[in-house]
Image (cartoon, rainbow, N blue to C red):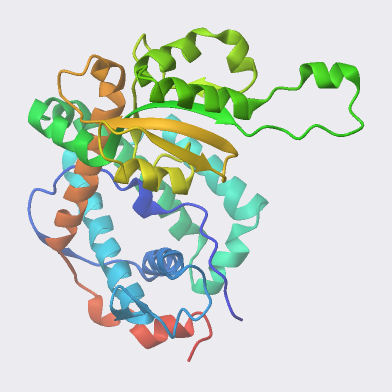
Length: 340
C-alpha cells in the first residue's frame, strides 16, 4: 500500500518545555519513532513542494530518506528529553487533562478513523495516546516556565527581534474599481464608485506635498470611505502599524515589496492578488515608537515561544537513543511509502 501523508497533530509544533537537568540515554518506542517518521516525511514533502519526485530530489542537500531519518532521530531525542524533564519536575497531569486526552483519542483515533491510517505505519492507539499525553506535559512545563523566560527578555533583545521579524508601515489601500454593467439601473449607477479616482486623488495630493501620515489619518476618520473598502494604517491614534514580515493578512507579493522597501520612501503597489492598490511607506523602528506597548505582549510571547523551540533543539543534542541500532534504516523508511 502506498501512503500519502496526512498528519493530524504534529508533536514537533508544540514541543515546549524546560531544560533537562543532565544528558541521558533512553529508548524510543518503535511506535513513537514511526509517528515521528511520518512527521518528518510530511516536513520533507512541504520543503519539496509536494510528494512528486520526493525520492529523486534532495532535501537540504541530503537524499530524502536520509533527511527524514535524521529528522525523526532528532525529534526522538527531543521527545525523550522533555519526558525526562517532566519526570524530574514533580509536575503531574490533572484529572481534567487526562479526560481531555481520552476524549481526543476517542474522537480522532476511533470516530474519525485516523487509527486505520496510522496503523499501516505501525502506530497503535497507545502510541497516539503517548503523543497526546506528551503534548499535555509540554503545555504544563511551558506554563511553569513562561513568566520567568518573559522577564529575562531585555529591551535590546526586544528591539532586535522587532527589527528582524516585523515592519513598521504607513499605508492607504483602495479596492479595484468594479465594472459597471451596461444594463445597470439608474440606482446602481448612482451607487457606483470610481475607486481609481479616489486612489489617483491620493497620489496627486502626495505629489503636491501632503504627507502620507495626514492622509492615513484622514482615511481613518472617514467612515463613508471605509464602507467603500478604502482602508489605512490609522490605529491607536497613530498613522503606522507593525506587521509581522510573514503575516498571512498580506499577499505574498506585498510582503516581499514591504520587506524590500527603503524606509521613508513612498511606494505605489498594485496588489493584484487581493485586488487593491496600495500606497505605502515603511519606517525605521525605534524603541521610542509610541505604539510599542500595543504590540509588546504578542511580540514577547513570540520571543518566548521561539526561545523554547531553540532550547528544545539543544536538549535533544544532549540525549542519546539507547536503541538507535534497532531503528529503521533510511531504505526501510523509504519502503514505508512503497518506494524501493
